[in-house]
Image (cartoon, helix red, strand yellow):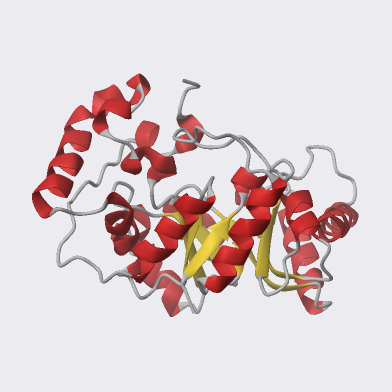
Length: 289
């Protein structure tokens, strides 16, 4: 079974700096799910915040898949957190057309450290105890978020960015710590939202300040006769502590390429592109092009 999980933000939004085809149509989404299953991919990653993604998945059907979704931020004024969580999950399940989820993650895990944090965590635990979700967890932007959370709460799943440029999860030691704590690790952003797959001439001007990084990357690809998709996937897939690598695609051919690349043997070496600049490695900080 493939260690890939199919991210479905493109099913609900026009998403991604490298996306030139827009939101995926229902017919394409259905074909992509069939291709994913055929390729051994049995997990889908979605979220309430991903526009029409949950509704799209419900329409095209998710039989054969484990589905992971994410709760949005709890409203600032929320007198009954448990009731809010129950309402959110009820609506998610209705949109998805399923009776339960494999995983439910928090999109804003720092809210666990706020006044209603324990109530929020207990609401997740109740969903797990009721069998509505199998696993609970968090989606983070940076591993340093874990320092204040892992000591207070137990999570079944942690999703975090990890790619050739952003290696913080691995380099910080958190990847190993999570595995030692029997946490299921899902990584995302293997292609840095597509930037690592673009030709040098196609990289948007807003990323010009990292010209040296792009030059090193493309010179390495050329020198090794390497495929960018294969090299990008090779890094997270080479780490046994990573359980799932969440990948997105905006076309059937792109998904086929990704599935094929994940089956390829890992290269003997990979370029060291690591960069700690938040303005590059955190897409949430990218200015609108």
